[in-house]
Amino acid sequence: MAQQLELGLDTFGDVTSGPDGAPLPHAQVIRDLIEEAVLADSLGIDFIGVGEHHRADFAVSTPETVLAAIAARTSRIRLGSAVTVLSSDDPVRVFQRFSTVDAISNGRAEVILGRGSFTESFPLFGFDLSQYETLFAEKLDLFSALISKESVSWKGSIRPPLSEQRVFPPIETGRLRTWIGVGGSPESVVRAARYGLPLMLAIIGGDPGRFIPYADLYRRAFAQLGERVQPIGIHSPGYVAATDELARQEFFADYKRMRDRIGSERGWPPMGRDEFENEVQRGSLYLGSPETVARKITATVKTLGLSRFQMKYSAGPLSHEKMMRCISLYGEKVVPLVRDMLA
Image 1: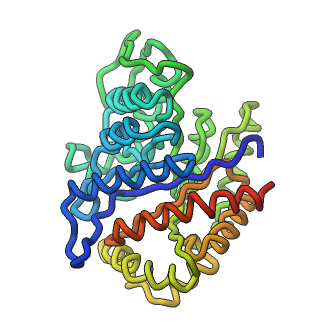
Image 2: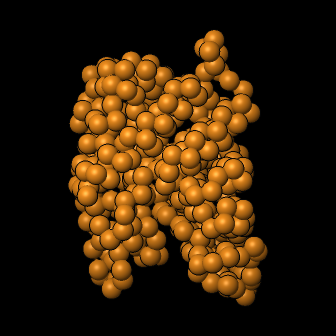
């Protein structure tokens, strides 16, 4: 790999349970999330990503605000979204919010732009789902101009044109690191290459090797464009405990509750133990002891030629205390083990 592998963490700010089993208030979940990020920074973890949702089971609707709070209490960890739903947002405002986080953090901000797998934001902000593709395509085109030029002239069908428009605050040095989040669309992979942007693959189920064709397509697209290939990363769920058995015991029930709740909205059958075990052993769930998780991450990094791995450690009502222990094991043991295995 051309650069050292970056190892990060993602959270969606899932509404967690307190000691009595009752859901915690959204405000407390957000405060706990900030403490989780501070811990990750102290352990030398490379990146923390915060997701955007607009529904009752997730506490974070504006990742940039949470990232700004994290920025003020950390010194080295990179800060980003996981993901920002660009289709239902204003590209200019997204740029301004992340450039502000970049200023607060002394250049540590980045953004992962996607269409989003949840659609609640479209009616909430007055967007028509029938324009799903057009909204993302045009807004990405505008955002690409915003990160590349000091003044922007742009015309499209979704908003009034811009003419030699400057946007403030500008990025202090370089440009805002911007990834394209992709869940399985070859068109989106090619689009990321066309704009010269890093690719973040959301691999939340099944054998990670299924995504080899997407990684190959991305690299071929750069070769055809005659440009230097950009990094590829993945986002996948996981959980680390002292032993494989303990990880299963602590994680299964909460993960199943989250997965079945979302699955019921999408027509999926409830998740059984066999499906869970298959994801742990052969799929995209990075669960177990530090050694087990490190071996699986290393294998995936080699298979796909990754520059970054982001593990989503939050899982529905999984408690803050368990997540803090998971983060500690990830930073203290998994990260150095992966680096040793790849050396």
